[in-house]
Amino acid sequence: MKRILVPVDFSKEAESAAKVAASIARKTDSEIFLVHMLELPVTTIDPAEMNTISSEPQIIYFMKLAHEKFEKFKQLPFFKGLRVVETIQFQHAFSGIISESEKNKIDLIVMGSQGASGLQEMFIGSNTEKVVRRSKVPVLVIKEGVDKFEVNDMIFASDFNKESKSTFQSVVEFAELFGAKIHLLYINTIHNFNTTKNIESKMAHFMEDFDFDNFSTKIYNDISIEKGILSYARDIDADLIALNTHGRSGLSRLFNGSIGQELANHALRPVITFRL
Image 1: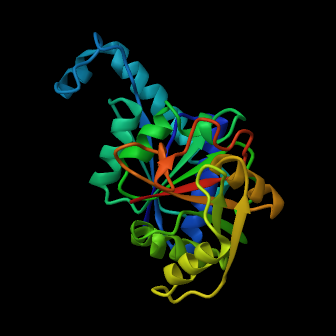
Image 2 (image 1 turned 180 degrees about the horizontal axis):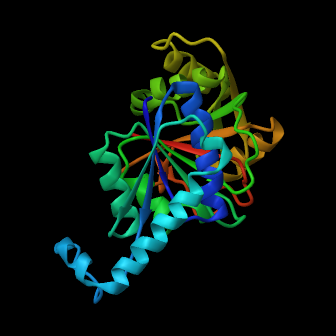
C-alpha cells in the first residue's frame, strides 16, 4: 500500500477520515491524495471547457476559496511529515473520486460518513455507497470522532464460499498492518440455516489456502445477517468490520443474498469493503 485517497469536503467527518488515513500512511510509508469535488451549477461551467475558468469570476472565487480551505486543512497536525497532494475536480462526488482513484493508481480510499445510523446511512443511497459499488480498491469508511485508529480485533463476515477467497488475502494483509486478529464470522439464520458441522468444515477449508494463523472462528445465531454482524461486533468490541461487496450492487449482496437496509443500525465502528 503506497497511495491513499481521501475525499475532502472540509467537514468534521472528512477530518476524521484524513486522520485515519494519516495513521495508515505512517505505517505504510504511503502518499496521501486529498481530493475536493467542486460541484458547481451546470450553467456555471462546462467541465469539457476548462479554459473557461479564467474568464469566470464566480469560478475563480470558488477555486480560491477551496484552495484557502485546503491550505488550512493541510496544516492539521497529523499530516506533519507526510507527503500530501491536493486536487480540486469539477465533477460529481462519486464519479470524481473513482476517476482520481484510477488516475493515481490508489491502493485504498478512506472516506468520512455523517450521521449515527450506521452502515445503512453510510452506504445505502449515498455517495459513499456509489464509491463502494464502483471502486476496484478497498474503501474504508470512518465516522466522526475516531480519536486513534487501532485495529486489534477485526471481523470478517462471510459465507466462506469460493468467491470470497478472491479478496481474503487483501483482508489478511490489512490485518497484518496492525497485528490484528481476524474473527471469521458466519451468521446462521432461521431462513438460511446450516449445521454447525457443515459451517466449521466450510471455514476450515476456506483457510487452507492462506498462511495466516491469527484468527478465530465464530458461528453466530441471529434473526438476520445484519443484526448478527452488529451483535457480535458489540460482543467482542470489534475495531473494524470487513465485508465483501459486488460491484453490480454495492452492499446489496452478502452471503449470496440481500444485506438489507437494517444492516448495522447505530454501528459507529469503521467498516472496510473489498470488491469481489
